[in-house]
Length: 161
Ligand SMILES: CC(C)(COP(=O)(O)OP(=O)(O)OC[C@H]1O[C@@H](n2cnc3c(N)ncnc32)[C@H](O)[C@@H]1OP(=O)(O)O)[C@@H](O)C(=O)NCCC(=O)NCCS
Image (cartoon, rainbow, N blue to C red; front, side, top):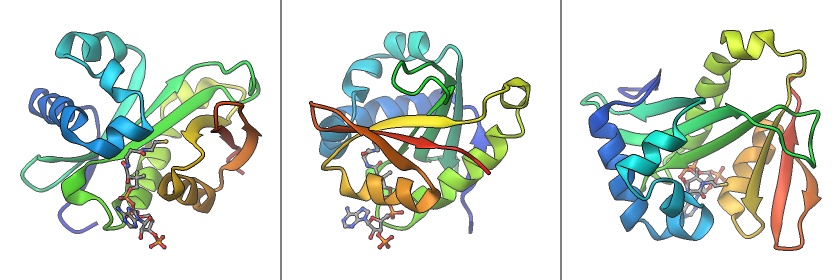
């Protein structure tokens, strides 16, 4: 990547940027539950416990996007112990960053002790069925649809080879 950096963790300034994008961006509000989980600094700080957050930043440290993993069971995909999510914020959107962030984040996370210690290695995520850009990204990466839920969401899973 030219001038963009993927790193583990998020700075205080970047948390403020994340909270602000969450408030202002219609796509985040439509396609995610971030308005709730990132409602305030307090809710962010509660949520962040146990998460592995990877940020995509520009050379000045501005937040371009975020991806996270958690060790979290889904009753409909118990053999896939880790969950994954990604956001690319408006100024950086539509420029191909999502795939780069996703690849870099997975590469880094899969070297972490948490991942290496786990016997089961799979990932799951949930996305809205009409979130075409996200579904395309996940399928390109190797996620497959396991279930389409009644409320029009897809449960997708990925088993690294
Ligand atoms: C979904 C998301 C992560 C994609 O990130 P991105 O960096 O903007 O996507 P990319 O630039 O890599 O584009 C991926 C594909 O979608 C297309 N695309 C992405 N955003 C687009 C837009 N606003 N308009 C038109 N096409 C778009 C790109 O053309 C590209 O297609 P290609 O592979 O044929 O070139 C980002 O749009 C986002 O954060 N959306 C809001 C939050 C969200 O929905 N997260 C996922 C929840 S499950």
